[in-house]
Length: 101
Image (cartoon, rainbow, N blue to C red):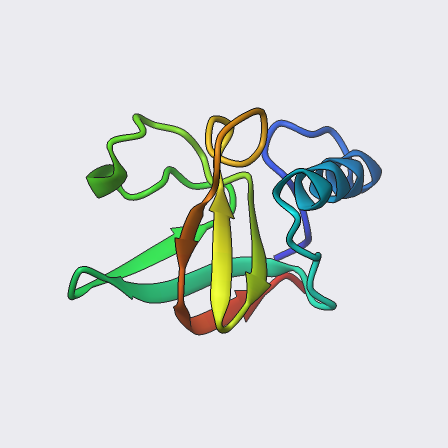
């Protein structure tokens, strides 16, 4: 999968948004951009994928995952209202990571 951020028109714009989000939440952009992570949350196996809706258990409506930043010790799942425009991202410990090409 080629790198993107939902609702951006090109890779340059996506990179700019990723840098803004990284600065806002104070989490560095990893060397390899993260596309998808699998993780455990309250004993349930879950996934977060850039461009897809966040898991319904978070009760965030149909918000799309805008970006995933972090390290295997701590990932930040960023949604428009949680880590992009305002608020704090969803923080999890990933088990499996899939990267953009």
